[in-house]
Amino acid sequence: MIFWGMGVSQHTHGTDNVRGLIALAGLTGNFGKRGTGLHPLRGQNNVQGASDAGLIPMMYPNYQPVSDTASRSFFETLWGSHLDPKPGLTVVEIMHAIVKPESTEGKVRGLYVMGENPAMSDPNLNHSRFALASLEHLVVQDIFMTETALLADVVLPSSAWPEKIGTVTNTDRTVQLGRQALPCPGDAQPDLWIIQQIAAGLGLTWDYPTGPNGVQSVFEEMRSAMGDGFKGITWDRLETEGAVTYPCRSEKEAGQAVVFVDRFPTNSGRLKLVPTAYRGPTVEISTDFPLRLITGRVLEHWHTGTMTRRSRTLDSLSPEPIIAVSGADAEIHEINDGQFVTLKSPQGTLVARVQINETVCQGTVFLPFAFNEAAANLLTSDELDPKGKIPEFKHTPVSLTKQANHHKKT
Image 1 (cartoon, rainbow, N blue to C red):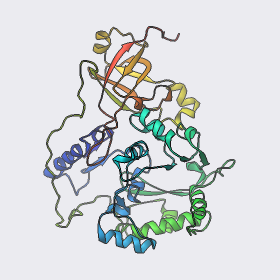
Image 2: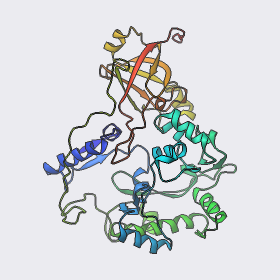
Image 3: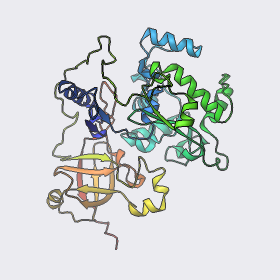
Image 4: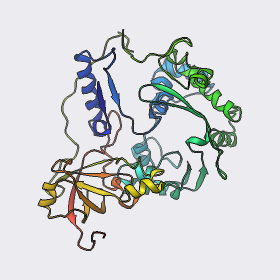
């Protein structure tokens, strides 16, 4: 069984990395039986469910390409609307379309951001923040005033996980029902209610029922769009069992824990192997930028810190950004543990404290991206994988210098 995190995919050759793992599992017979397969560890909760439901700019629900005529015809009939056959833009491409419309088919003038914090999570933040600030109109729907919300023209108060009902899907394809445990505080509203109000203002008749019945209606619509694999997962069944794994083609089935037992979802039913050739990073380290920066998470903080840094306990355990370096690199740069340093890349500069950590390889530095006071993505590049459109978060050439005017806290 092969597990991997974002360190495999967040490169300009990330798609080829994953294709190599698929080929490795396929050629060694590690598909279609228990204890085998490929398991990408998703970066956020319900990434699997969001992807299943079509929150990918080049896919409809159930991973049907927008360019496929038969798939497009199916969804046009389902939704009673004409659909554009051209793929949409990814987040990074949207930022370019705001400030450099000549590079796309049209200028993006407004943006509606829901539960996302691109002013922290996007690469090359100087560029991304400039793009967000350049919009004619920015709407942010969130539970906190995030760094992105601070740039918004309108902030819509959304609901947190325990304040709403709905489903999430794990990376193992288990669909789970989450029930509302608390009322929405203040002016906060359920996400679906907010979306319906906006739709009504645009003259659309998204007339789902109010409350939990509306969410159930959306789920049933999703089931009708997801093919045979979702037929056995009814709302009533989720309310009774709590969770069901897909593919599940009948309400009497338990759901398939193992997939690709007899065939793959290809025309031939056989695994399609895609040859790959080694491609290094787009920008190599140099004399000016001799170290490689890797960004990621720490145990205490999740994603951009929107929620975890508001937890007093978690913030006290990990209160500030730390640049992890090897002992060998600390000696070369004459840096002591706890000393402040400047990290610089072609994209930007930041200052943070050093931690000497022997789990970090020589020539590499690590910085979590949850801290706005030293936002790691000020340094990262917005170069994309040409196939998957994934930024190269896991390789940024940087330089490291001591800060003479900062001293270690006592």
